[in-house]
Length: 160
Image (cartoon, rainbow, N blue to C red; front, side, top):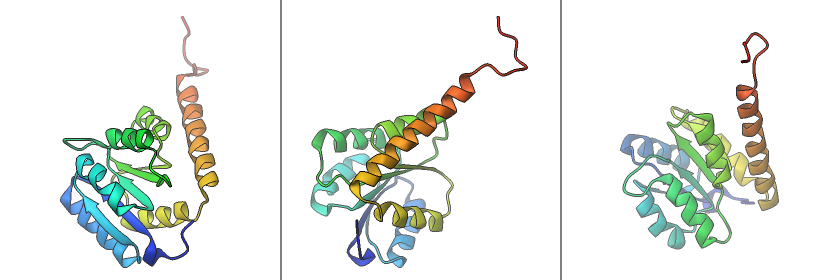
């Protein structure tokens, strides 16, 4: 749990330069120490030395995408593990569920107002590690329930 935003480091991994600049500016204005990188390869290089308290991660990037960064974080067991807020254009329920299963604690779709992202970051940073784990499991269960409802036959459907 972070007590002062001035000491809190946020890594923004976003390949769209305009989005990265706006998001970094909003986060800096909110008092966070921010570093922005344009792809997963740079993120993997920066994470060990920058030691972010939270990562804002796009999923669709080249040469290394956000999925690979999530995998790298899990395999390398960064300690303490930074919470990951996924910010992506992928709106599919299966992608959202996969993001939570891969370690993301929050999943927001673009476009999202920067002020909402700052609000979510503050909320996530206020949680203990145990609360973050519990939240991630809750998100996975919520997504599974949505998938189950979508796959269930509807009362007005013919079942063959």
